[in-house]
Length: 367
Image (cartoon, rainbow, N blue to C red; front, top):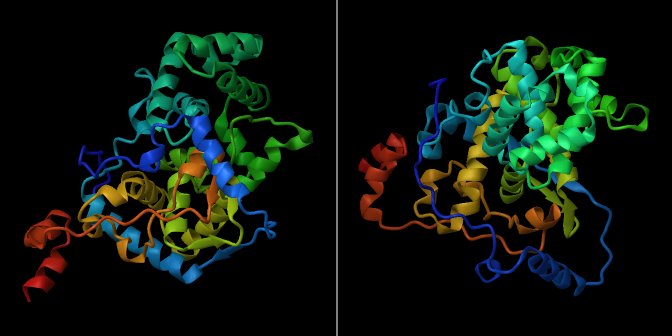
């Protein structure tokens, strides 16, 4: 498999984030509609309990890795060498250098809601216009200075971003001499980082939670930073990974609603353990799951020949609706599943099998 891949513009269908009749409703009205629907039932929620299908998860992860490594299904058209963390960093910075690691450490704070391209573009702008944000000079600045810098770049909520940047950067430069590697040496797992973050009842690295810190660790692993491979249980679990696990029935919960943060943490630990036991490369699986969820799951119902695009099509019961996640940070068990993409004109099926790299299926049909 090629190590240097870049994303193509192959079309996988139109986005489908909300039900058709709700698309034009304002954010607050869609949110209110969901809450009214829930108030119809007054039954108390039981204590939250997750169910994990270990055997089915192993089968699914090995299947997606097989497709990823052989570059079949959607992986014939989406590639990873053009990932934003590799594409967007200051021109004068040498890739893999101390300056690059520092840039990633702070720039990753801008990666939120799965919009990593925009986050790293903004980080480059900050480094060009306000280089003191990436140096110990920030110890001499105030929060208001950072807010002004964020506002100048065009952040919609500059205070929120500035608070995370200011707090995390001050901890890094005052306690670790601005060296992220010294931090990695001090911890042995993502949980250890979270404990260190909350030391003495504070928040020493605001903006960093298990998802973003896992993402940072994987960025460093891609660059071959030895200390990053010693951090255990690092697996970024975002909306896309959670939706894949729910839609495939790998994880289920006994309540109507579940908080996405609790679900993400449960999946992170199960996935990390599976990768360790089965020797599955975390970086590759993380890319594969993200592409699957981002390129296919949200668009599945409007996409033809989905059984050729998705390596897990036969295991899927239809995508979970992501609207409660986007509006409230929760998943709802009682919302209807999205219908799966259909099979269309069989006349072109042999050709399409070859297009998606499924030559074995083509040979089977010819026999």
